[in-house]
Length: 83
Image (cartoon, rainbow, N blue to C red; front, top):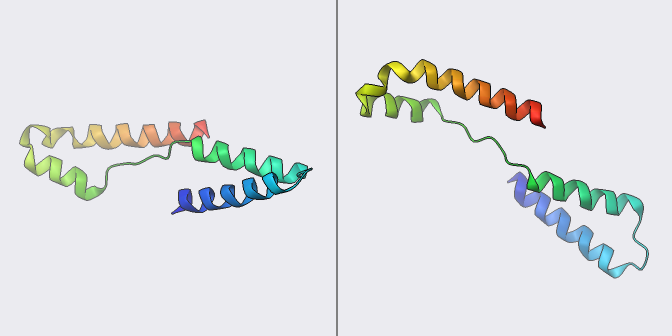
């Protein structure tokens, strides 16, 4: 949903920029900021249901659940620190 909203805002600002001979600095900054936000990758983690399905459908992974959760937590931290 957020990506869609950003794309709509970008489209509106780019239309304004195209129709204005001298777009404002704030318009240009907003366009740049939205493009940068759209270029960032959003963290998509595993839900509890995803992990439980892996755990029960693949018994060999049962004991790896803690490792998966710890790894996911660290990746989320790194994603947050990167932004």
